[in-house]
Length: 228
Image (cartoon, rainbow, N blue to C red; front, top):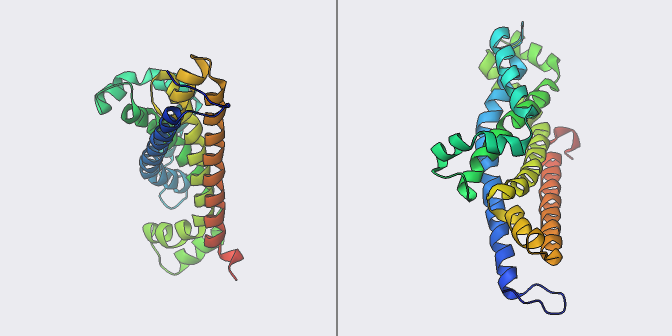
């Protein structure tokens, strides 16, 4: 049993919240990294593979676009349940922190891909044409022009993705994924401990605020237009 004194969390519950916060950060960081490793090249390809573009492959662009849209349109909690067999295959279990990384990554990759696509498409096409005129190849244009110019926007996009993953990580707690969401459900909801639920909400808000502030600051530093 966890005792409460003057409305404050007991030391034991405080330890549980700290551990749950670590689990949430672990899930978000790993799934964010894996999602970026898949979503970044996919997003760049989607942004450069329409008819007449650098890596023109309209049919493949259309197919990948449909897959990405289908994954993005599936509610996350349904996605978690739908891919349980795949999660077991990859993680060896459908519950726990490591298992939760699988659906988080599957949800993050197409989301990041669309954000990256939008960021790359914002780059002034005049720069692309200038690079082409100088004899640069498609890969050179992507790595030397598009990605560097889109970097501030990409940073903001990845910040948004991490913030979304924090929300998803709380939802995955409903199916035994661990982290703050799991703690809030088990103690705050099922054991009628509103103090725990309130603490979980506050911690999540602080995490989101911290990530957003860091991302905004980094994007400003990377933006050439605001360099003094």
